[in-house]
Length: 597
Figure 1 (spheres, rainbow, N blue to C red):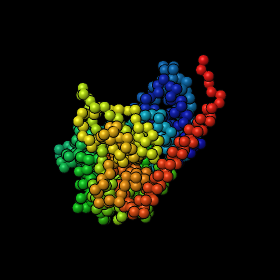
Figure 2 (spheres, rainbow, N blue to C red; figure 1 turned 120 degrees about the horizontal axis):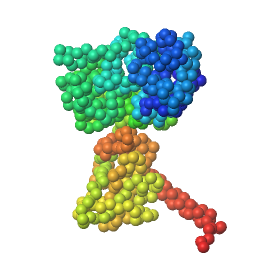
Figure 3 (cartoon, helix red, strand yellow; figure 1 turned 180 degrees about the vertical axis):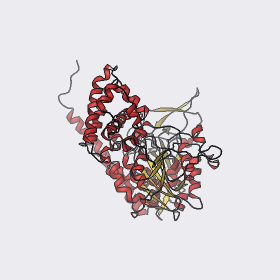
Figure 4 (tube, one colour; figure 1 turned 60 degrees about the vertical axis):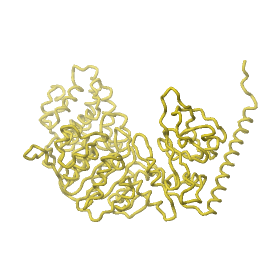
């Protein structure tokens, strides 16, 4: 781990500050920063054949180029140290002093002292360079740990910043960095330059063997990849890699999983967003294909919290495939839940979850083996939190929410000239988490919406409907009072909510809306609801998932009476609190008020 008082940390921190003051500052600051470190490494290893100050005085960078420093990096350094750039001169002097000092301090130091990855991938640098791509280094190490110490060749087809490739190289693997996108990364080149002091190594290659038609045939024992999120595989650089039987997948993550599986001889490790694990369409077809395969190779899925990527806070997951896997069950691990509950850093999470993810630990609430049958029952969703939640609450004396309720969904706003204006109930009525029914205290809500004249009566809220938030703020719930209805004040649900309408003809005749509300707002009910969360930018819950996944304990008559008593007590206490608050306000405002002129 890079210590804050080590020469490397101090040098990089100083260079980060100095380079921002330069008129020659690159918009991708880490490239310029790494170019300075690479120059220091070449000088420290006496690869330049010329003193640093002489190199700068002569403005002749041929020695650096001959020593293995990439041409693009030399261009960045030339701009920084150009004698004609007077505005940059002060920053250049400070940068040179830092480079020279570092090269001397680490002259006889081991190669580990030159490790720059912990600094450039640190969480506190994310806002500094928003256009760059880095991953949290502990997650990269976890992906490599999933190879279980086995030896073999590694191909890294998607690795924008070069972190996976350099980390695999450090572990002794032969690494092919051939990119499917066709893009080259100066950051990756500089990382290898720093690692090897510009000396070429046969363990690093970017070779692309091709068949008779010129199509790439790259494969490896292990393939580790971080494909782009939300993209498509329609560009020519992608299409040349596509095999004939993957044409039905054109979204980047689904395409990558399907294609790379055929090129990984032993294991495929893919870090992605959650999208392909739950989305419908081609992603679901891929999941069905993986699960229903004669020899399923999907070994494990581990979900991580946001913060893995430098450019985004989206939640991520690691999928591990093993060609020699025995048995069909899949290890599902939800480290995101552990991080949320215990407020742990990614490094702590990886340390805790390493043995679980690899399968060396037993089963617990955040990690266990899930059977193929359970996945099929969950409609082929592969989100660990969804599957672990189903297993936890799938007791015998329970009933599916969809068996006792129907969903009242938002209606489409009407833009005609003769609208029916009605109220809209949603998050504002739920956010304060009151127990009294909506409309009991304030029957008239301010927000209105236009709906189609003659709209079906079923879309309007009525007594004992349960308003539930399913987008943005998840899991809020509250009953609707008798103030609303077709023959009372007409109201509909907002786009962020649905209403659960109790079906009194259901098989569980003992269930009541009040009991259901109390359960949904309990810790157990909230755990079930939030386990269904999907979506990176906007958290949301599928209505069908809510109805088909959440299970409600079937109560006895005594339990119903007891829960109803608790509900009435909560409402009474809430009313007392509001009354006391009003009394306190009246007392505090009864003296020394501002007199109006």
